[in-house]
Image (cartoon, rainbow, N blue to C red):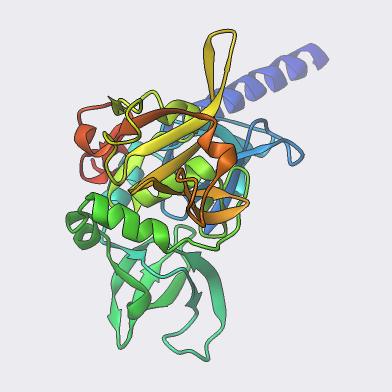
Length: 322
């Protein structure tokens, strides 16, 4: 009798694990469910934060272990976040969400409210670039549906329809530099890619994203993309919005550790302590002796959009379309 009971229990455990495995395999898609989530190198609160993702960002879920999910973000980055930071979906659920009408936040910071009123309770904070599902308009508000099924209200002045926003993205040098200058004075944060704090490559990535282009995550990855530009002739070959890469050469090998956006006239904008403008020109008030001595490379990104696997427009990125 005991042997039969033990045998039955083991069969039950096996079936449960098998069913859960199938369910988990089906839920291999996900959408970020908080205004900004932090992604780590390992499944631990004490591990290093290496990147962030915004609400509404589509991700691939590689595995889930002890309350942590290993994700791949649209820029190809793999990292860990807490399981509750995303809503896991089947392929059918994911396609339904991608196809649904959405709005994207266009102001630095805002909040969702429980009712279409400034006096209503706060449901969540939102930041620039967050994406939520749009259920329609109520007065001066968008009625939105969060991924955990909560209904909330977002001021229309703080957001715009997502498909309309994507269609209107124009990644020109002028637009990228205009976006970049809106970050001046904001703080540096290692691993940050949001308005709450951004590191150097998070800054370049975010500027291009807000102009409709998804870049790779790290400076060492971004330097592997784009068109190589000769920097041997006093920067005469550079154009505004080219990316500048800094670092060192050890044993004949480049080690890229920093990236900036070229503004023209020897000036560049970057996140270093805080967002700032620097210059290669000795007589400039922005002269940056440190970075002037460690420039390694320059890359032109705008000439390679959708012709380079690391430079993809949102319009054509498979994570954002069925």
